[in-house]
Length: 109
Image 1 (cartoon, rainbow, N blue to C red):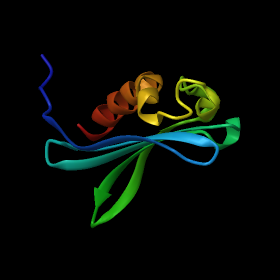
Image 2: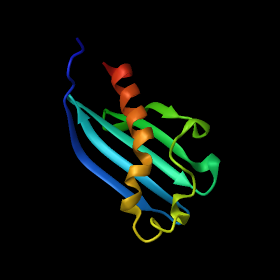
Image 3: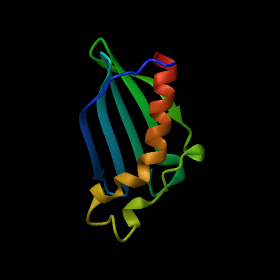
């Protein structure tokens, strides 16, 4: 039986850039602070899904999903539903959020 790891959200936001919509979540996993950043850009190569851990007051990379493997669609900022409401796009990031969290737990615990 695997140990239940306590997760507490500190911040979770979805926001619009000039040609992108991004998701950021900062949370505590046990006593470790983790940051997830996912970006849906209009260009494939500028999309990313990254996870960081806070070490010595600096965010250090732990895991990333190559843009070609991401499930988050590119160009979300052009979707009619999300153009004026970036927060509504949060569900589009779910598969990549789940993957980042899965691997963070496997790497750190």
